[in-house]
Length: 140
Ligand code: CMP
Image (cartoon, rainbow, N blue to C red; front, top):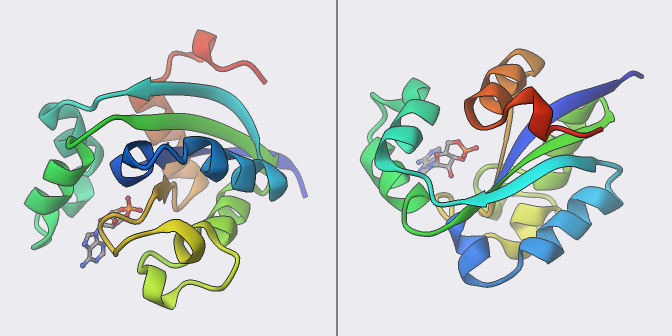
């Protein structure tokens, strides 16, 4: 299996609880390598653009409000089949359905405050990485 790249966000519920290190440690323990990382406070425009595919969903406005409610940590992660590996360690979107040992089962507060975002495909990972990072900011 080849080393590939994915995109991750450590969400405001995690920065608020000061557990970004704990989340990153779980990503690293799963075999992912942080090759870019920065703490930002997303603007409303950034959150609306990033989550544009969800614009028609009933939870869209709440999602944008939550993602702009505090700082986040955006990260680029490398690993063996990184998109799938990251989704395994994150667990199901709703922490109530997540497997034991996953980030969302162990740390998430709710389906909205679910601690982490991870790309759902390599194609979207490339788009999401380019949304937040210049090539020069990624050091593998
Ligand atoms: P994320 O992977 O960041 O992508 C979209 C987010 O919408 C998702 O994680 C959830 O945190 C959030 N969300 C909020 N409410 C819902 C819902 N009812 N169904 C799915 N996702 C939701």
